[in-house]
Image (cartoon, rainbow, N blue to C red):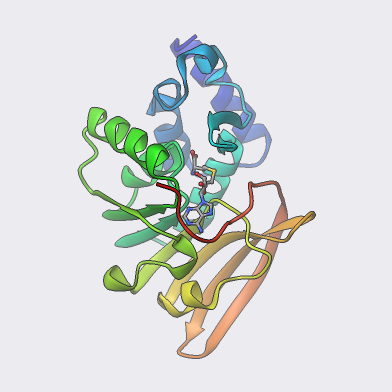
Length: 211
Ligand code: SAH
């Protein structure tokens, strides 16, 4: 189930769906997704599908992880990235291998605790986690060159826009029933460029925290 062949098949599928960045595809192939999933489901770890991780949440589909990471890195290397919605920690682990520093926030404490253990197991030391409502961003660590949101708000939170550097990129699914994946680039102090990339399907961004 974790064989090279199974993982290569996943990478081939991501390429077929239009993911092109070899750095991203190499990291996805080399990151053990099965350790981010409960044992009962881990035989499905290399299928291109979201899977339940408890608390009504899911580990993102590999396609979404690869696509969003590729969009984030498209204009060159990034120094610091904020992820909203750590969940299993899988997207966090992929990012940590491609940018200097990852800051990731999660509102459900038990999910964050598990994610932390997995990231330690993989010896990814350039990651900092915080238990909080990520709709507020992470003001103390801002501004960020990149922000990646893995849960969908109905509208783009103003706090996240405010925490981008000029030139910084925000990748975010937006919408209630019908979601769109958006790429927003801060082009100046008060100017933003928004592009709709494709349709998306993520769990909702919720406010408040769970202990
Ligand atoms: N990147 C994760 C995706 C998990 S699903 C993975 O690959 O496993 C989205 C996550 O966002 C869930 O864990 C959910 O609890 C979290 N989330 C939702 N609203 C949030 C908020 N306001 N702040 C922080 N995390 C939030």
